[in-house]
Each structure stands twice: as C-alpha cells, then as structure tokens.
Length: 199
Length: 113
Image 1: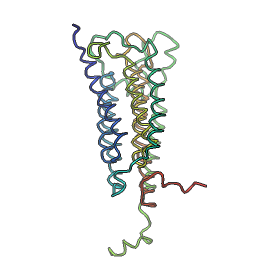
Image 2: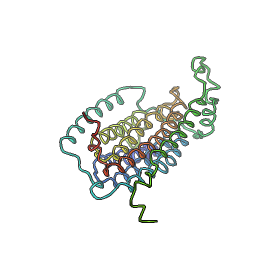
Image 3: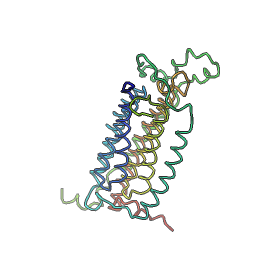
Image 4: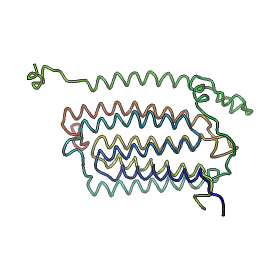
C-alpha cells in the first residue's frame, strides 16, 4: 500500500470545505447564514492558496477578504436585516432555470479542466518551499527578481514589473474611498423631521 | 485513482475553481437580496483567484514555466479590487435601502419603460 500523501489529504479537506460552504451559500435563503457560510468558504480557500505555495496571497486572502470585505458585508447585513428581508425565498421557476444554466456551465468547465494532459497531477517536488513575499514585493515595485536568471530572452522580455498597476490601484482605492463616503453620506437634516425632536 | 495517495495537479484546483465560479454565478442570478448578489460576486472572484494561483504555482507543475509569479500578483490585484467593489456596492445598497426601504433587487424597476 502506498504511503498517504498528506498534501493531497489537506487539499481534499480544504477543497471540500470551500465547495461545500459555497453550495451552502447558494442553497440557504437566510442572509445572515449566507454571510457566515461565505466567511468559512473564503477561509478554506486561503488554505488552498497555502497548499499551492502562495503563502503571501493566502495571508492576504485571510486579512483583506475575510477580515475586511466580509466584515463590510456583515455590516451591510446588520444594517438592512429587518423582518421580511432576513429570509427572501426565490421562486421555483428561477431556481430551475438557474440550476439548469449553472449545471451546463459547470459541465463545460469541468470538461475543459480535465481534458488537458499537462494539467494532470505530476510528480511532487521535494525540498523546502521558498517564501514569496519578497519576490512579490519587488515585482510590485517594478523589479522581477524571479526572472533575472531566465535563459530564454523571449521570457526575459516579460520582466517588466507591476509598478504602474500598483499606482493605478492606489489611486483607485482613494477614489473608491471618497466615492463610497459620498454615496453613503447622511441625508440633509432639515428635511428629516425625526431629528427635530432630539433638539 | 486514489485521492489520498496521488499528488495534486492543476486539474484539482481548476475543478474547485469551477465549482466556486458556478456557485457564485447561480447565486448572482437567483438571490433576491441585494447583499446575496454581492456575495455571489465575491464567490466568482474567488473562483477566478483559485485558477490564477494554481497556474502560477511552481509546485503543481514541476519543471514547466507557467505564468510563474504573475499568477499570484494578479490574484493580489483581484483581492484589492474585490474590496473596493464591495465598498462601493455596499454604499449603493444602503442608499437604495434608505430610499426604498427594501433590499429586494426585483423592486428596483423604476427604469423599466
């Protein structure tokens, strides 16, 4: 009997958690439960990132997605979850149509994923995993240290880093901050009579 | 093939990504709560991220130069843009809730001719 491959075992655990809770998000109609299942699904996905050797992306997934975006979503749920909006049922016709189209899409994607030989499992590399944070940081600053020893000059041509996208994303985040603060601003107090009673 | 003893390949990651993507897409199509639609978008982006990280991994396909570190860098950008998108969409949903006292996306039909 072959020895158990623990990488595969942990992959199986995290993959089942991620997919199972994603399906649970789809099937439940209670918005609070959906938010909770989404947290678990995204956290399990960060485990998959760690198993693929992407340690920095996995950590960012936990910190930004689970810690930031999901908390934002849960604030939205708490601000709007009142009475009839906690549980909104979808009609049977929409369910049938959605499941049918989704099933077809899933069949196409699975067929594409399993049909390429080069994507099938290969032999495992032995040795220590190298952390990626330094290489990613240098890439964001414009220096691709991972491609310096590239022999092929064609591949070396892709050595331009990600400094410009990094700057664009920085300005984009600033614009988003200003824009969402503007959108969510409180209404004018003069038209709101409920504030008069507080004075 | 035995899942417990065989090594994991890119195919496995692609299957997980496909399931997350389809779940998110169906979620976007069937949920009536605007925040449920937002959660579907998060699932779709996450499924795409799984594919990017799998193709950029140096451990799943040894000896083959894939997209390398580019996959992880793109995944980072997707995470950042998802955070920005969630902030704006949440502000819009709160505005909609303030104006219409509901979060049902089927009630947002004022532009219908």
